[in-house]
Image (cartoon, rainbow, N blue to C red):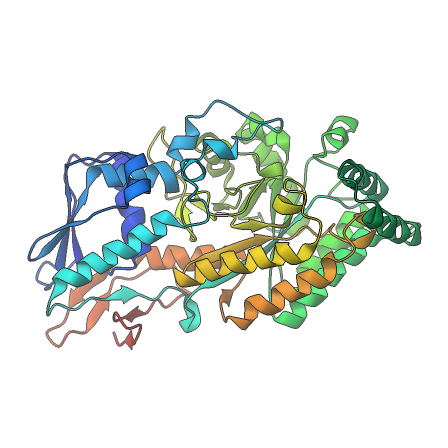
Length: 475
């Protein structure tokens, strides 16, 4: 257990870094002033730059009864997990996104490592090293005794007009000289004329997830399509159309979550976010709690503020479009950092770790086997840090639209993921659990060592406490 010693002059930016670091450490914070706990304090220096921290690692100062965190490290946590560095970048790509190369982890070739998560684990080790006979207590990482978590997500980008997307895929392959693959796709496309390959693909995904016992999160467009949005590959269907309505019904009947896939127009601010959220909410019968931006187009802080004002509970956008990895340096749920007011707790960020098209579109990898291999490699990294793997599989990856081997690869991905026993759930439940765990504190330590936990507002969850070996302890 730890007792926090927060300096009165701690800035909002530093407080965010401290909260995230302690949360990722899983160390139990005790409120009882009489409890025999390691004190966790904040000291001024010596300071180290973010580049030095990424190059050489971090250090926690220790004495006989305390561990001290340097202020500069708290700022670095906010720079990475809160995307504070990227929030200051003005350069954008052709889709209006911050280039991946602007990310500090990419610049240091560390994007495949959840660096901030490991800093939290190192803090936990430092506390254990000075604890002596004092008990070290941790919060269980995930529900049901699971040691890591995984979430499958899908972006419903296409419903109708599928031949156009097939033509775009064929042009992409033609530029790379993939003649044999083009011939296979043409055969599938001709066989699908007059049919609904997109709907069949969605239903195949739902069947595979049902067989694997998985409930996923689907992000659905609810803007109004126009010729201009079609040309940009943005909004390509009406939510209320018969085709989209059938797919939404199929998804809901399968027990899956539906969130908003925010159109490019939402960059204009909260009004468009609110309009699209309310439109989707009318179709679902309840307002969606989550959002992911189309093309992963996001301005950290600014877009998050609009999402919060529109009423969203979490955002699932923060990931790389052109590579896979840990854009925020974490494999977990963290609060969004809103630099203007320092108020972040009302909107949570669920980072995207892996996406199919990061390799197939941006890296020219057409064989789905390497895609699945990379997904599982990143899942193993998440498992090693007891974190959360979030993957995105597009339902339009079907033979007629240019991906003849993708459906079988998706089944292999699901089978391998569940084999390693993660906690698997839609994102709204994962977010709910992490809110409950983050809010858990020890109000009092009884003379016999039993812990009285402070009541949590997340009533459905019972967060457990464990020792350093992962053994669950009684209350």
